[in-house]
Amino acid sequence: MTQDLRITKGNETKDRILTASMKIISEEGIEGLSAKKIADLLGISKSNIFHHFGSVDEVLNVLFKSILTNLVEPVKSQQGPDLESFLFFLGESIYSLSDEEKLSYSVLLNFYNTCLYNEKYRGYLLQAKDEMIDAISTQLSQYSSLRKEKLLEISEMIIMTLDGYGLHFLLESDIVAFKKMWTLQVEAWQSLLK
Image (cartoon, rainbow, N blue to C red):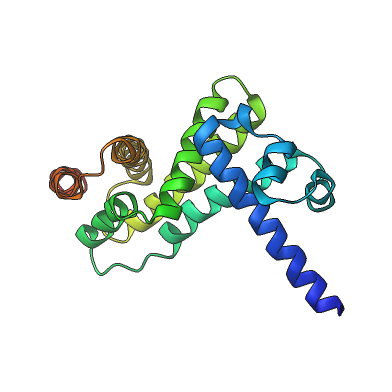
């Protein structure tokens, strides 16, 4: 087997381990994740998991950072023509979730719960929250002349609202109702950002 093929297969196995871990966490919580459960789900040995990740804790770290990056990067790179388009983009990021994205969001909510008693994960989450607030604020500054401090406050309010929408959307995926509610939110934020 060539070196390139081994690297490709290794990366595929790592991705499968992360996907299996997400499935387990979404069903059983972070405490339910173990090397044995991952191995059983994938039909591989536990040693294979430890070959790719030094520990289950490392799997969690990689998974957590990956989910947070996947949330922040689209906001940073969004190129909307106006404030309304950007705000609707944020809402659509919640109520237009694919099944894979719903799984990621479910895992993120499990991390939120773990952050209540685990300082390491709390630190990761607070750092990601700050990055998201900064990304939203930077985008808002393109459409509003408000002071940076005010934009940061509104951005934090937006992220808190997005979290609530995400939780409720996972509970009840009524896209029509969520679009109506998000439209009301957009109108409120537009009036704040004038």
